[in-house]
Length: 343
Ligand code: SAM
Ligand code: SF4
Image 1 (cartoon, rainbow, N blue to C red):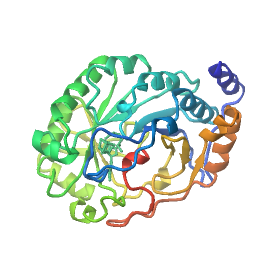
Image 2: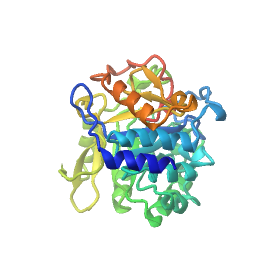
Image 3: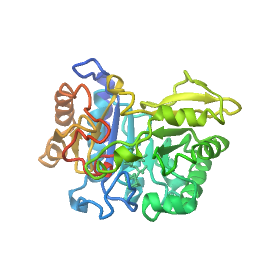
């Protein structure tokens, strides 16, 4: 029924949603859970953070309605993220709700991959199109130490199963950490390219939980690129490799690109095309801006998709121009862990 109304709305009028600076907003990142089965050192404190209780989180139907509202004003891609989205037992239902919204043509997922094995086929069947999986090291002990307990073998098996099930591409995300994994960049790259997993190296962003050691571990992407160039010949790639801010390079001898995401050394806010929904149904216009608007309450108080769409449109006009992060300086007072927002 919900989808009938959305379809009518989309058929009548397809909006192109832009913010006050003319940035077209077509990409929504939905954090479906702020909890996680891992505790990556750069993302969360060892003690974890206060997780949202199950009843406070959006239900699959509420997620479907909010996505429906966003799609009615121009959203075409919806990433399921977290925290760890696969900790939700109803993740397949969530994926099915989201992928059946008219106008949504792409439903990628970000996951740590630990629970991917055994459920990749179901996710693909429910409409998940692509996957990004965090792999900060291929060395079992090191991986376990970075993630505080993760098993890299399970992750790699999950990635293989996902690609075989038709979730393509499966991308690899590696957070760059000086003195932790910078001796492994060539090995990670070779593994990714030989398995046709596009790889993105991400600069470590400061959060209140890591700000004390982030400057020490920070490795600029261009330094990582220089390290890679000892082993690989890189040339700029002009192909479209997704919606994100990564700058990609072709690698001689391989069909798969490697990319760099530079939130600190190369600000890309002028190209930002996204807004976020937290697991409690709040719209967040910028990863590092603290203002949030409660969307799910509109639904819980009896509002419809049109009401939510109007609110999203009003809020997007106030999307901040840029974040004010710097090495050792976070621009959010409330963002203790990336898992709380969906990185
Ligand atoms: N749990 C999933 C995962 O690990 O992929 C999805 C959520 S996680 C918050 C999304 C991405 O954010 C991951 O690639 C993770 O490495 C990245 N991330 C988390 N904290 C970060 C930080 N402080 N700086 C840069 N990237 C970070
Ligand atoms: Fe969990 Fe992902 Fe954060 Fe690691 S990066 S603690 S897997 S949410």
